[in-house]
Length: 174
Image (cartoon, rainbow, N blue to C red; front, side):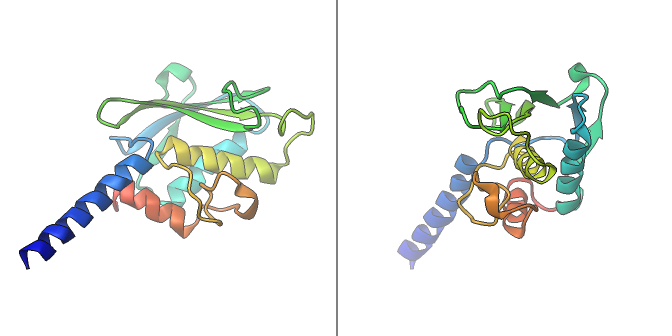
């Protein structure tokens, strides 16, 4: 019986620690200040933050600010994402302290798909923006086919139940 209890405890401990490896970080406050650079697609990004706020039952809320220096999350629209991920059209750069808590995050959204001059549709931009906001909230990539956090988001447009489940594992219920 003792061996069984020790085994169960070890499995629970391993499972709870596995989550820490799968998340990018965690915000320690409930209201996050967001700066979105002026751009004709800024409204889509603002809507993407609102979609996460609604989908998570306002567990985290977003206040939009006018100055970058007042923001926890900064969103910039760029010609090409500055990382070495040459085909990326959206990238999130988190700053996390030694406790795994977010200090800040920067999201870059590129104007073009790949290296082409084909502008992204609003539908594709919305998918990418929701995905990058997920990263800025601490969610990693997943291999769940219809998750917005799947890196090949061809099959998904909306934040799904699996995304919310992972979010709740990180932040808990409100």
